[in-house]
Amino acid sequence: MRLSRRRETSGAVDSCVSALIGFAARSHDAGTVQGMSLSGEVKLISPLTMENIADAAIAEGLTTAEEVSQIVDSLYEYAQDPDTFSGVPRVVQAWGRRPS
Image (tube, rainbow, N blue to C red; front, top):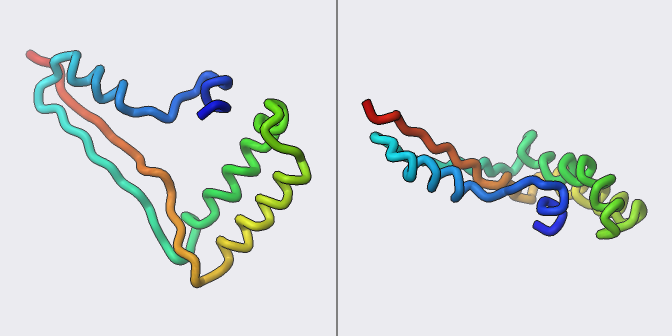
């Protein structure tokens, strides 16, 4: 969270849902999806994410290039193991219609 705040991003969805409800949308609802698997692309999300945030994490002094390399290697090993179960964060979708 500290890194996302510094980089002006947000992982929170509650404000979007609250805004939808506050907008007085009628027929509003929300749903979630969370992919999980013993194999396939879903297991590559963690190492790919670590590779993509590495520069920012290093720049913020949260880790070193050596540590990132070790983490990424470990995550790829984990992903290739057919006996490990992995998943992605929940994805939330909210929808509604404007009042007539």
